[in-house]
Amino acid sequence: MSPVAEKRLLATVLGQRQERPPVWIMRQAGRYLPEYRETRTKARNFLELCYTPELAVEVTLQPLRRFDLDAAILFSDILVIPDALGQSVRFETGEGPILEPLGPDDVARLDRDRAMSHLAPVLETVRRLRASLPADKTLIGFCGSPWTVATYMLGGRGSSDQWTARKFALQHPEAFDRLMDILVATSVDYLVAQLQAGADVVQLFESWALNLDDAAFARQVIAPNRRIVEGVRARVPNAPIIGFPRGAAGNLPRYAREVGINAMGIDYSTPLDFVRNALPADLPLQGNLDPLRLVVGGEAMESQVRAILEAFSNRPHIFNLGHGIVPETPIAHVEALIGMIKG
Ligand SMILES: Cc1c2[nH]c(c1CCC(=O)O)Cc1[nH]c(c(CCC(=O)O)c1C)Cc1[nH]c(c(CCC(=O)O)c1C)Cc1[nH]c(c(C)c1CCC(=O)O)C2
Image 1 (cartoon, rainbow, N blue to C red):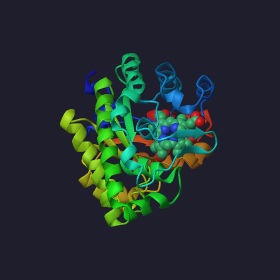
Image 2 (tube, rainbow, N blue to C red):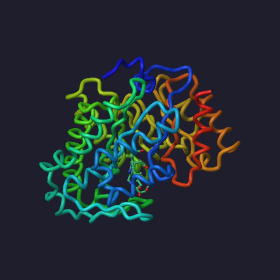
Image 3 (cartoon, rainbow, N blue to C red):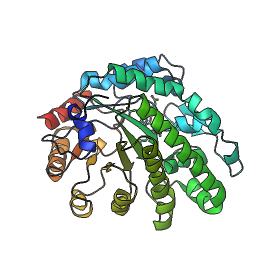
Image 4 (cartoon, rainbow, N blue to C red):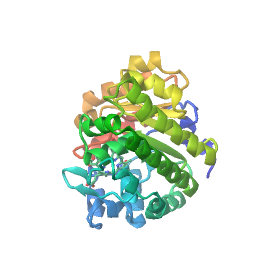
């Protein structure tokens, strides 16, 4: 690993405020880039793209060739974990992921023993990225947090209310806890392997940290994420970890206090005043521009970028969107955004 000081984004995760915030863009490799769409045609399907190191390295690096970004994020997906555990996962164009939903009796059939060998190509991608990235670029590894991954495993597809998974957690507590145990253990192995292969920092994507009451938030979000942080740090001391509990709203302070992450991503519906008043002043934060403002550009984007830069100017801050970039985003708007951040 090259020295921390050279990597401004990693240094920020570790608590150092920068004169200008480092920047990366959530889901920065993807369909808004013509070169991504071109490379995508070389794989038969999306998972094959994730498991072919040559192609995955290429799409990871594409956004860095165009924009002055401070980090590369490993090209993969949060749903490689259920795939690695033996659940059927498909990505249909225009429809998103489709999984064979797990019932209570299926949990015992998930096969942890095959998971890491199945994920070996992703780790090869990390090694190749490490070797090809300049010393000042931070390499971000990631996985989905157990609850978010479970919403897809139990529901079979994305949903706005996570109804199937939330009901399963209440109706089948033992099978649910067993599923969480499997996902925690697999995620720890996977993140440790990414760090050992050369990732500088790892991010936990909890995209569905919403719609949960106090007890469900504690059980489904806080506990498994904390177990992952502790499990990773037991094997990689001081591993730098970013948590992104999207939609956590009033639960953000609790997540920040109890999970043990170094830095926290905040979504775009988190009020900037709330950030100032309710979160520790020295906690590094990442976010939080609404991706739609990047689609529209101009003053709709610039006014909020200024507000975000101002609100975070006194703390360690990584500029990012408050959720993933969308395919219809004009490339010129991304250039304008980076220009504003870098000055
Ligand atoms: C929930 C979630 C998923 N995947 C991910 C999350 C968490 C972040 C979030 O909340 O958006 C995370 C993810 N997905 C992808 C990355 C790669 C790295 C990067 O960000 O550049 C990362 C970090 C690639 C991808 N993952 C996916 C694509 C598009 C696939 C294609 O090319 O057809 C990409 C580039 C597919 C995917 N994967 C997932 C969905 C719901 C979809 C379909 C919707 C969509 O297309 O955005 C699951």
